[in-house]
Amino acid sequence: MEQRFMGASGLRVSALTLGTMTWGDETDAQSAGTMLRDFMDAGGTTIDTAGSYVGGRSEAILGELLGDVVPRSDVVLMSKAGLSHRNGKRMGDTSRRAMLAGLDASLARLGTDHLDLWLAHIWDENVPLEETLGALEFAVSSGRVRYAGVSNYNGWQLARAATLSEVPLVANQIEYSLLERTAEQEVIPAAEHVGAGLLSWAPLGRGVLTGKYRGQTPADSRGASATMNGYVEKYVAGHPARITEALVTAAKGLRRTPLDVALSWLLEHHGVTSAVVGPRTHGQLKEVLSSSLEPLPEQITTVLNEVSKIS
Image 1 (cartoon, helix red, strand yellow):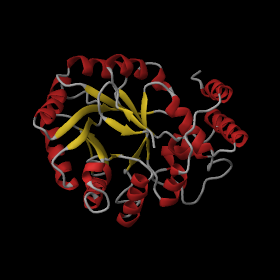
Image 2 (cartoon, helix red, strand yellow):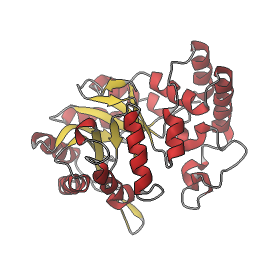
Image 3 (cartoon, rainbow, N blue to C red):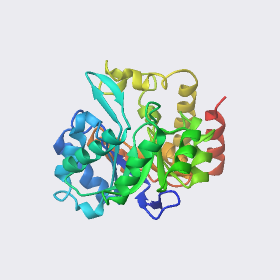
Image 4 (cartoon, helix red, strand yellow):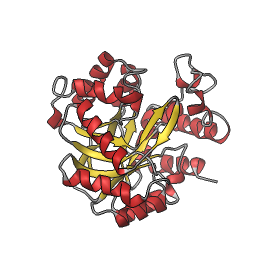
């Protein structure tokens, strides 16, 4: 698997990052171990988690696997702080107290003395930006974090943060795919200007770009879940559906899977360092790892750009 530099930094990450948001919920520990081993065997190095994922269970499972299934030194380990869920409600807090407490808890669950990349999970309008950045800076200076970044920041937020930060912000993790291209308007130009690489979450349009929702909703999919159907609903009809149909047609012509073509399209785009894939099952990971990720013919790229452009 291709290795890339994160933004303008010297941090090398794999073109695909293994996301662990479902570990401890939809993905059990045994399946997680199998997926981690296969991902690393395929040349992947970069693992993404967060203190808020399944109440910390995602990190705990990953921590049990590091050193057992794979050596810690072989992994580029990324986590996030500043977001939690209490009584079913999403709570943001990027204060110095919350961020550093979150870091300590993450390191304990992961069983490591440092993170390779640590991100402020969200923009928090209730906390001075300088305070959030101060937590990132202290984490780096204390040696508990090697590189710092942010997540879900829009263009001006990223530019402002990078201007004020005493340490380089090398990454911004955002949603970006053929079905969600708003990042091209401000985030990507801002990231290029400040030297931050993009980590694209939901690179497969929340699963829709695999083509599995065409004319049906699989019973075992998030779209069929009473709690998760809203996550994919906006991408299964109207203009997004026409984008998916164009993708499927292109994939058939290339004799490749829609998943492969969608990821290849994304990874060709300037500014994108890695696509964060979050398979729930080993079968889903196997399909991801079987992708060629080869550059697309220019004509195909042009057609996909045209059909998916922001109106």
